[in-house]
Length: 177
Image (tube, helix red, strand yellow):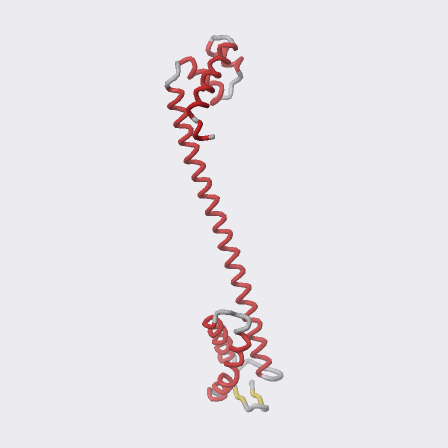
């Protein structure tokens, strides 16, 4: 049973609890407002403390002054508030970073698709032999010697076709550089 002889507080009765609230809620507010800039949030924290006090009134065995108990409770609730606020902030930062990475990835995918389409259009205007040399070399990753064997042309001819494609791409894809 939480009874306080010094100030005659009896937590088990609503009148005793109300007396505690009337004597200490404003003190708690003035102490807490120096730590939390949001008066509404602080009022909510103080209410939580008094609700918990009322709900646990039959099991509480408070040694010492009720004021010390309430101020300690306020201190720990304020610490929890800032801890929670920090977690939320870190969580939002992680979400923001993830979203920006996704956005950047999406932008890259779109740009890559547009670039591939542009290259396809540019190479479509070249001769069939040049198109084949380009695809085998740049898309399939064959060496000039392998391309020459597949197309039955000399390595020098493959180099010529690739140089032709590179020149054309450099001129027409200047916007991507």
